[in-house]
Amino acid sequence: MVWLETMSAASGPPLVIVSLDHCILDGREIEAMREAVARAVGIDASSALVTVSHTHGSGWMSRERSHLPGGDLIGPYLDGLRETVAAMAVEARASIAPATVVYGQGRCALAAHRDFTDPDDGGAVCGFNPSGRADDTLMVARITDASRRTVATVVNYACHPTTLAWDNRLVSPDWVGAMRELVEADTGAPCLFLQGASGDLGPVRGFVGDTRVADRNGRVVGHSVLAAMESLPPPG
Image (spheres, one colour):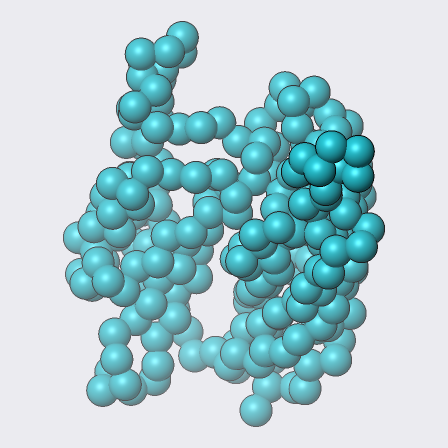
């Protein structure tokens, strides 16, 4: 979670950004979290943005699936998640301090076009398409305090977290997890990931059950993030 507000209240209300390691969440769950944040910190719900990393290694947490085996656990989990997000907002508000955001653009080659046409029958296959175009744009932001210490980073990259597929039986953030670990270890600060418009983009190597491949994919992005951050100008 990141809490952003301008130094002047006249410039607008604060913005709370939450990123969760889920693939999808029902709209009503998103709205419930936004409203819980709004009540907890006294802002309008429109100032709370709840996003997901879109990892396909997460459980599909929808109350519509409560009739399935284990589905009785979904509702209590989502209720607890809502309260956790609200508590995080309270903690974030209590720790606000003057900071500077410097942002820039880098490149990363992990994402590849994943809509392949079978030359034999013309059917569409969800897999690496070597002739397809892929957007390699990577956006980074470094947030520093008055002493120029990094207090947070924000990363935006478009690539489906689909390294892990049907052979995987673990709950995982997919490549996003290893990316964050690498960036946080280098900067000593939390890293917030915002999934881009990934559409037809996925890892060059994906749909496997080996978590080591997911970690390697994450390090590809993580090193690209650190390279982009090295090119950023100093605060101010």
